[in-house]
Length: 256
Length: 281
Image (cartoon, rainbow over all chains, first blue to last red; front, side):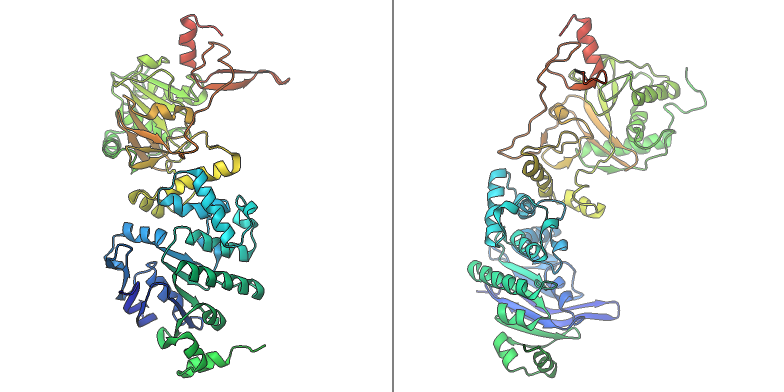
C-alpha cells in the first residue's frame, strides 16, 4: 500500500528568511506523526504547507485519494483541494475560535461539513451533530448553545467533532492542547487518542509539548531552525535522543 | 415637464452603455453578480441608486414607468423616483401594473402576473447572500465560483434550531438556474415563487455595493430549504380588510393607539383594481 501522504523536499521561504527547508517523510493510513520543536522552528509553517493552506516554495506534497489515485496538492484544481479539505481532511486549530464558526450554534458547527457535501435533511443533520457531540463528551442539551457559551476545553472538543463528522482519513492538529489547563489537556488527549484508534485516523500533530507527542504519536520528527534534526519512533527518540538539541529538549521536561 | 439641461434619463450615454454591458453580462450568467462602476446619483445610498441606474440605462422614450415601494405607489421612495424620471426622461408613468413596461420596485413583486414585454428592476441593498456568514469578498467570490453553498444551509439550520422553523422571511436565498445562489433583495419570501419561471426580465441593481445581476425570463429559481422543512410562504388568518383578497401579501396597519389594527394588501394597485371590480371584504 502506498503512503497516504508523502512530502518530498518541502521548503518554504519568506523572502530571505527560511520557514522550513528540505523536509521529506511519508505518512501511512492510521499513523500518527508528531512534529515537535521550539517556537519559531518552522513546525506550523510545515503543517500549513502540508495541509495546502500555503504553497511550499519548493518540494511536493502528494496524497492518496479515496479512489486510490495519488495526486500532488499543487496539481489539483482549487475546487478539488477545497473539497478534500472539507471532506477527507480535518484541521484542528490551536485557537478553537479560528476553527469554529462562532456566530452559530454547536449543532450548526458540526453540521456544516455535512451540509457542504449536500446533506439536506434537517433531522438527519441534527442527529449526526448530537451523535458527534456525545462522542466528544459534550452533553446533548448543549447542541443549540453558541460556542461562546462553551469552556475552552469544550470548544476544542467541538472543533474536533466538527472536523470528524465527515469521517476524514487525515487530521492536522496544530497544538491541539495549547492554552488548556493540565487536567483538561489530559482528558482531551485521552479523547483524541481514543478517536484516532477507533477511526483508524492518520494524524499529523504539531506540538511543543513532548508529553502530547508521547501520548498520541507513534513516530516523531524534531525540528530546529526550519530543519528536521531527528526522526524516529516516538519512544525511541524520547528514550534515547541522538541530536544534542533533542537531548536538551528531553532533559528540560519538568519532572514532578 | 422635462428638464432640458439633463441628458435623457439623467445619466450620460457613456455611463448608460457601461451599465447596459453589465446588464447583458448579468443576463448571460443568471444570478451572477456583475461588478459595475456605480455612479453618484442625486439621492442617498439606500434610496434605490442601483435600481435607478439600471432603469435609466434601459429606459426608452416609449416606455411607461411604474415605481413601487413596499408594494405601494404613493410612498416617499416611489414618489421621488417616479418624479425623478418624469423630470429627467419625460416618460409617462402609471400606477397600474398592467400598463407599465418597466417597473422599478423596492421590497415587492406586484401581485398581478408579469408579462414577457415587461421588465422589473429591483433595488438591492446587500447583493451578497453569503455576506453575513463570510465577511471576506475574496472568499465569497471563490465560494460562488466553486459552488460552495453549504454555508447557506447553516443559516437555515440555525433558524430551525432556534425558532423551530425557517424564520428567514425576507431576502430569502434562492438558486438561479441550478447554479448561482442569490439574494432576491428584501422582497418577502412570499414573493419568491413569483421569481421562478417568470416571463418578464428581472434585473437587480445595488448602487452602494456596485453590483448588477439578473434573472432572465423563464429561468428556474428555487428557494433553498431542507427536505424535512420545505420552503413555505407566509399565510394570514384574515383577508384584506379593504378588498377581501386572500391571495395577496398583507400589511398590518395600526389604526389608533388602543391596539386596533387592520390587514390590507401591500400592493395598492392590486387592491384598487379589485375594488374597481367590486370586490369587498
